[in-house]
Length: 324
Figure 1 (cartoon, rainbow, N blue to C red):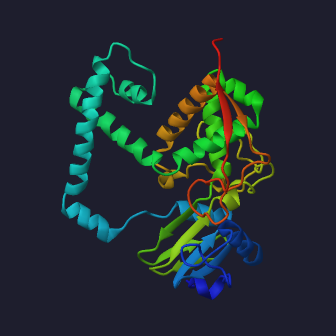
Figure 2: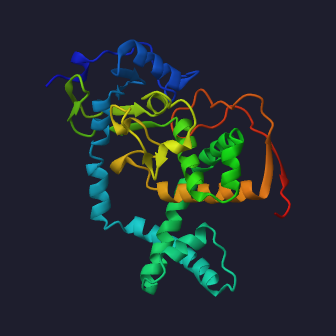
Figure 3: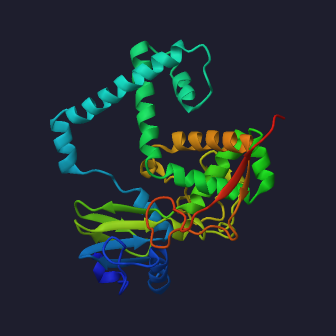
């Protein structure tokens, strides 16, 4: 089985933003793809990267096993002691909040209430722990990309007033589809996996043996908006639940995603979509918003990874809506 360097082209002069200054990281990888094809190598900062964008290559990427033998052995040897202690501390804090919620005469239907209600009927200890773990998960999600994705969803709805009116009226299903669509188009994520031991990898053109120490990667913005005709436009109707409703135009359904596929999916997907749906319906249902930008906002060019952050401030004027 050949090594990657024996059969795959090297994208010369390409560096990644954590190693060198790059004006537009996504454009740099896009240029390498245009020159080298769907699978190529990048050498940056002394490290080796195999980038793949072919249907078979992307499917092979999502089929990779995620495991760090040394780290997992350390965690297993300790019985996950440190991790369990941290979760116990979280559970104690959340338990106090649950008691206050249970004793409140007026319970709202917010995200915390929905989490609590989802554990109704379970034994007290199971219920308390389950609520705490769900709350911990949504907090992890909100520390990174949730607010950025919500921002793009509001930007897109402001550009589509008919959809905005439906979301403002409480159409939660449409709001969720809008959240998925805006997240898809705003993705700047590099999906990367470090190779800990040699692994055979099918690129679609070659099966190569990738050495330990290399990184296998794909870049969502180079697929999400171009893997099939029409994907460059915002259309929430393309979604059914968490997947593209009609993937027949795609060479592989894994070429397009908002939150990843299979075991590489974001674990906070359900809670993130729930939080975005609630925020959109409430904010747009209570406030009339007027965008103050001229042209559609653009992402920070140098960003690679996560949901895009806007390159410039996106000012919105708002006013409280009167009673209807």
